[in-house]
Amino acid sequence: MSSIRRVVVTGLGAITPLGSTVSTYWEGLKNGVSGAATITRFDATKFKTRFACEVKDYNPDTYFDRKEGRKMDLFTQFAVIAADEAIADAGLLTDGVDKDRVGVIWGSGIGGLRSLQEECFQFERGDGTPRYSPFFIPRMIADSSSGNISIKNGFRGPNFVTTSACASSNDALIAAFNNIRLGLADAIVSGGSEAAITESGVGGFNALKAMSERNDDPASASRPYDKERDGFVLGEGAGALVLEEYEHAKARGAKMYAEIIGGGMSSDAYHITAPDPTGSGVVLVMRNALRDAGIEPQEVDYINTHGTSTPLGDGAEIKAIETVFGEHATKLNISSTKSMTGHLLGGAGGIEAVASILAIKYGIVPPTINLHTPDLDINQALNFTPNVAQKREVNIALSNTFGFGGHNTSVLFRKLAE
Amino acid sequence: MSEIAEKVKAIIIDKLGVEASEVTPEASFTNDLGADSLDTVELIMEFEKEFNVSIPDDQAENIQTVGQAVSYLEEHAK
Image (tube, rainbow over the protein chains, first blue to last red):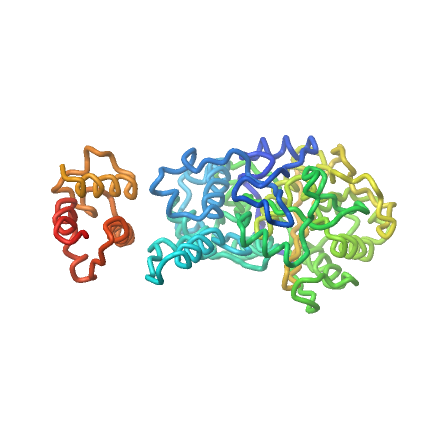
C-alpha cells in the first residue's frame, strides 16, 4: 500500500542497561559495551541465572517526586522517563501542537510484574486479611504506561498499549504508524518498556530454559550467532519515539531523524514458546513489511535482528533472512544489539528502533558482541557485524522482533533526503 | 503531641509527600494536602495497619482531616 500521509520520527528517548539517555545508550552501542552484571534488584543466590542487564544506578527520586514515583511500577517509570526525553527532543510541548491530536501507543509484554508480585507476597505473609494497596491495580496494568505518559503531558489522542510478548513495542510502533497515516492523529509517542528482573520474572524464564546460565561470565553471556550461546539475558528499560505526520513536522520546523516506511506482522501458528524452525513466519513478516513499504529487498542496508542468543531462534531468523533477501543477504549488515543490552522483552522493539535510527543518522552499524566461535549451522558468508561497529551508509534499516505466542513484527525506517 | 498524633503525622508526610509544617490538625487530606480518593484509601489502610484497628467504610468517610484521624485513632487504637 502506498501511504498518502507520510510518517517521520521527530524525537527519541531511551533508558537502557547501557545508559539512561539516548546519547549514553548510543555510546555504549557504538563501543560494544555489555550491560550484563550480577542482579542487584533482589537476592538471586538460589536462582539458576544470577545476572541480568539492569538499568544501572537507577534512583526514581532523580526523575519523580516520591509520591508520584510510588504510584508507578518500574516499567511505567521507565516509560515516562524515555517518553519525556523523546517529547523534549521533538519539541512536542513547546511548538503549539494541538494535544487533542497527539496520542500515546506503548508496548509492554508483561506490565507491572513487580507490583503484582509484591502485593501477592504481602497477602501471603499476612493473616488472610486483604490489605491490597489502592494503587496495586493501576500500578500493575500494562496500560498504566501509556496512561501516565498522556496524563503527564495532556495528550488526548488515541491511547492504548499493545501486548505481544517480545514483539509488543514493534506492534505499538506499527499501530502508531497506522493511526497517523490514516489521519487519526498528527503525532504519537510510541515505543515500549519492561521491568521484569524480579524473582518471578527470572524464575519463570529459567523454568522455560530460555535464559543463559553463564553465571561465571555475565558480560559474555548474550552471544547471538556464537556456537556457545545458551539462551537470552534478561534486560530492562524503555525506548521511545515520537512519530509524526510529515507535513505536520515540516510545518513546525521539527528535526526529522528518519521516515517509518513500513510495518509487517505475522504469526507462526506453531507453538506457544518455541520458534518455528523453518522460519516461515519470519519470512512472511519481513515480506509483509517490504510490501507495505513498497520497496525491494535489495534496498535494505541493515537488519537489527531479533537475535536473542537462543540456540533455536537465532538460526531460524537467519535462514528466513536468506530466503527473503537471496544474494543480497551477504551484502547486508546484520547485528543483534541484544548482545549488549540483553533482551528487554516488550521493550526490545523500542530501544532497537532507536538503535536502527541512530545507525541511519550516524552511518555506523552497532556490533553483535561476543561473537567468537562461529556456528557452522549459520551461513558464515553473512556479515553479523562481529564485535566491532562498522561504518556504513544506512539508507534503509529493518528492525525485527518476535514474541512468545508466535508473534512476528518488522519495522522499516528510511533516511530522509537532505 | 501524643504518640499517636506523631505517628499519624509521619504516615501522612510519607504517603502524601508533604512538608511537616503543612500537617496541621485542621488540614484536609484532599483540600490542603493534595490527596486524591485513592491516596485517602491508602492513608486509612496505613492507619489500620499501624494501629492494628479496622476502620469501617462509613466511619472512614468521616476522617477527612489530620485532627479527625488523630481523634478517631486515640479513641479506637488498641
